[in-house]
Length: 110
Image 1 (cartoon, rainbow, N blue to C red):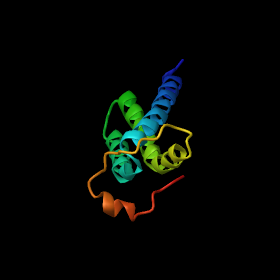
Image 2: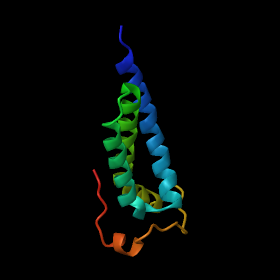
Image 3: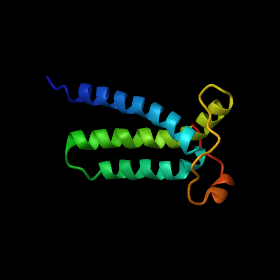
């Protein structure tokens, strides 16, 4: 029997669960304006997974990259949920480089 698919599925489930946690905490401390950097990191991780010869490492890096990519689209919605009081809100956020310019862009969402 080949358990590779089942084990990768379980590992992906944990990576996605970790994605929920970092989106909540990341938005609280950094804010949603980091979304372009998070999207770029997700794309880089997915692209890097294409060049890894190990099946395990490639699958896990690709799943982690997809989770990070999803997190970049989720940061704005998390900011709205925090403003509604569903999650803890923090006034002082760490702004990214180019924050004024990023504020003029529409944040992506799925």
